[in-house]
Length: 402
Ligand code: GCO
Ligand code: MG
Image (tube, rainbow, N blue to C red; front, side, top):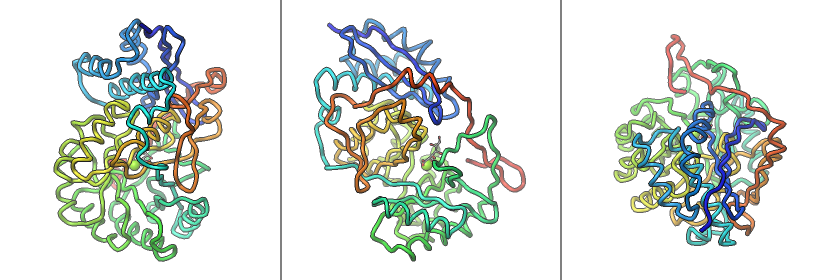
């Protein structure tokens, strides 16, 4: 029997910080897992190095489900982003190994293709409405069929999702950047910015918007109602997601579809949202929701309730997560959309992948496993660089949800 011989944890900052797990079997097969938790990277690295790696050595890499149960139930302490990200890295690496041993892409092990490609949405943003419109035009020219639109709110001089450089990267400060927030200013401005996109470009593409947990349920209900004529693909994270019951109120007032779940980590965190049909898209991801094994379980539950997938895919999720997402998205029946932000060139120097984008669809080459390689030597050139996500403060100085 092949056994797990080695498990190494790499922490590097090619373009931004990533934590990567590499498992090697006694037959010399390697598997990769993403273990990145933006702004809290070393907590997961320690969870892996200090607590999980010693448990892996000598075990059978083929027993993926058993390993998941062993690490989840065996911790006694359940759920939470640190634990679930660490379990995810192990699970993802074992699927990669299983694919390589079988000589098949992972999506084949998940039941094979359900679709020809994975619909993605790109991130258009602007410092005002005219620059947002220019950016939407750019994404349309690039062939994207779905575009998320975010613009800075003039009165507060900024907002969530507005790009500064070539790539939107919020974890920028060596201390958390403090950004101003006014719900009133946002609610006065945002619906008009989305309407301007529809007025200029029409309706032959999907339009998305991320509220980023900033509203109360009744404010979100008003927002959703007000943008109904924009026919959004979704409004994302209208309200902080840990209160599942809060979504009922939004739901009662608007037909604007709702997406949430990027910060949630387990099937229990989304159970009520799904079974009570309080959302339309579940945004849990491979890296933060327990790996391919657990995310598939969430999506299977969602399929029973007309909830479709819409996995988180910002640049703080490594190319390993993106590849794993593409394999899962290709296979599941209730795929909705996949978030996609191209990674920085430095990131792609370290992670070599087989994922490609064409006509707004992602696909992977027919290679065994997940099709990602980690260049350890290249990674050495990019040492860990601690960064924090921003925080938001209301105009009276009190903390708001960022
Ligand atoms: C998104 C997200 C991200 C997160 C980031 C946090 O919809 O892409 O909201 O931009 O804020 O991934 O690390
Ligand atoms: Mg989001």
